[in-house]
Length: 145
Image 1 (cartoon, rainbow, N blue to C red):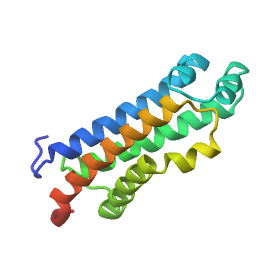
Image 2: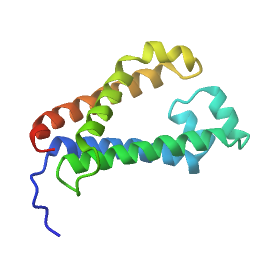
Image 3: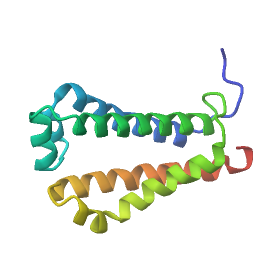
């Protein structure tokens, strides 16, 4: 089926980045403790994963699922798939969450002291990148969504 709506490359890139992040979280379900360790999770999460506790895979799955939905919303706003409910509101929220997560890491770090500095810098930098890509794409499609 050909795409008839205008498409937005920035939102396609934003969707791809969100989906890659989702895949990394889903990979932890199969990769286990080593996956959590490589991705910079704290020692507590790694130990829980080694003990086959339910919490690390649940969190990884939940974050992967949310990021997949966010990718779908970026695709919808970009004109690549059928519009989703509350498209403008949800995409504004997604963009805001990415940008807030990027700058709030000094505050969040207190609640997750086991996460490495590398984790915080890399994940916050990626959230900033994805948030800015979403923001620029959202600005381009604002009038039609």
